[in-house]
Length: 222
Image 1: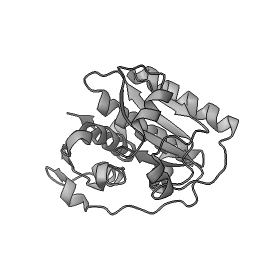
Image 2 (image 1 turned 90 degrees about the horizontal axis):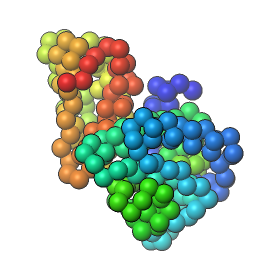
Image 3 (image 1 turned 30 degrees about the vertical axis):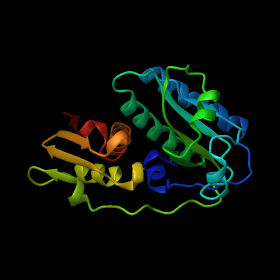
């Protein structure tokens, strides 16, 4: 499965089978996480076989079987939210290529337990976790805005721009608000996001998806 195929196949999955990750899958996930950490100066970490990511009330209602998750942590510095968003998008798509399912969890996880399990340090910033495992199902596509509601291009938009916007609309965002705006002119593209405390995280996630859809050789961010 290519990354583009995985991007289209990936949907939110909140209920997981009682099936452990294989040692090979754990090794591959850890390697990918280490690559992202080195590239962006982050402290993300895979936690396996622990059921403490979700508060009990959510574990009984909205989720099931979440016992593997990636802690999205980094130094409490400028730009870290966008980097964590961008890197978490990469990890979710990569996990999908391994036959796994994921769920980006922002406000519902147990902050106390997740911080206790993190090796990033007391001063690290944790923006959320990504649940990962073998889903009971493959999820369903989320409701989406039309491309015209989130994008504009000066002149006739090229195919790569349209594909980038379509890819960005596949991205998971806080409350599924898709509160981003993509603007293009020639080979220059800008993207902004306005949705409260998770704006920069969502911006990073959307940027990753746009790049995957459009192809980074076709445009330059401004």
